[in-house]
Amino acid sequence: MALPTAKLGRTGLQASRLGYGAMEMRGPQAWGRPIGDDEARTVLNTVLDLGVNLIDTSPDYGDAEEHIGRWISHRRDEFLLAGKCGCPLAADGDPRTVPPHVYTRANVRACAEQSLRRMRTDHLDILMVHMSPSVAVMQAEDTIAEMLALQDEGAIRFTGMSGNLPHLPEHIAIGAFDVFLLPYSALDRSHEELISAAAAAGAGTIAHGSIARPLMAPPEAMPEPARRPLADRHARLAAANLDDLADGASTMELLLRFILTHQDLHSLIVGSAQVAHVRANVAAAQKGPLPMDVYDALRDRLSMYEFRVGTRP
Image 1 (cartoon, rainbow, N blue to C red):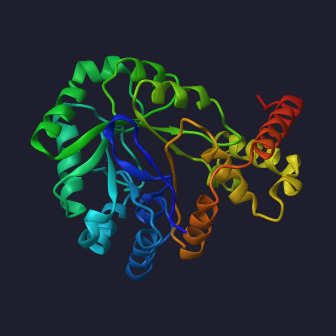
Image 2 (spheres, rainbow, N blue to C red):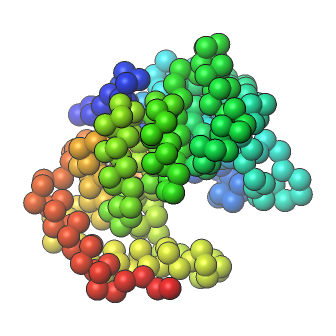
């Protein structure tokens, strides 16, 4: 069974409704787990073999771009490539320390050119501004003007924003971005209406953070400020007891199909460095949206639990 596709708004690009997030290819230098060449090659080629045709990456993702260039650049006509700009290209000291993002024209171009070299391609299908700066910051730095210059040169096909609150509404309002990548999951629906707003403006919409974050129990060693929201989400999911709604399916499948049920969402990206996970994600996406009674019950059950327990201050 083929993966369903959707048109990414006014771009006209046909994207698989399940995309692949390459952050899991980042390696230990960027706080990821070690991943060998054979493992990376197998996972990336499996992604394409299973019909996933949207790959999202960033200069921030350690070794990810190098792996994409080394192992699947010869299959470039089989997938859409979404990259990022504004990212720091070098860090002093600990390579896992991420300096502030910079949105100058020079850095936008440097990010794009480095990504093209690393991924052994002559164009990015989408170049997204990373980390959701304000419109005022981008105007001061001529960020969008440089993206349009890259578009005129053929280095990128469409512009995008990897955005979130509080700046996302103004990102949509200015009409400069063809695609939006935004956080959305069954346990964090804070951007739910903004997906519809972006789609209504003619943009493509892609979700991230949909599966792993709700499922992940926070490590005990994680600092408390970072651990707390993960712990709250994990506790909510466990207490909601969704087994009767899953009808024998995994919680992962239920959460993934919940996202696909949003009528204005065109695709979602899920990352993994394990072939088994990639296959499971594809199998879930092939089933499409949830039945509306299951979707409504899952949404209401999680909302009721959130209302009952609240979140810790």
